[in-house]
Image 1 (cartoon, rainbow, N blue to C red):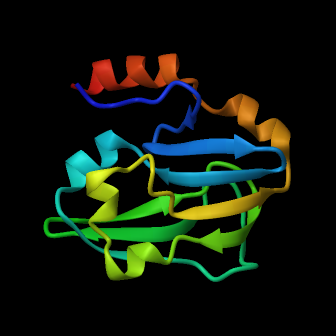
Image 2: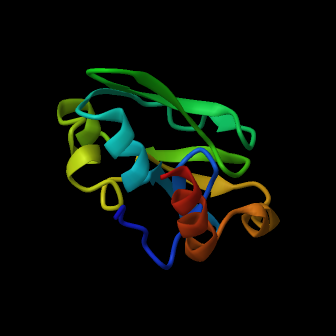
Length: 128
């Protein structure tokens, strides 16, 4: 069974969102890292880059595939997880501890459009 954390929000593209005030951490889910396999490279955006909801902000490459990562909410990049440059496999070992970017949200109401952990578990059950 894939790990799904309760206090996060999720997308159909298997990203997770952890909201802290006006900011949010974004990463990929356990399901995503599992499907990708061994992750060998993570492309990170620049600080202060702005992205619209559902725009690709990162790419994750594994031994078998490359996959874009989409921003679930409009926002500006305020931090990137530089540990992933030297050790991209951190996304395999703990996808929820190892966020990819931290953003400042432009429109916090967009969170309401994301899935809860319960919704996401239902989606996974359909995909299995």
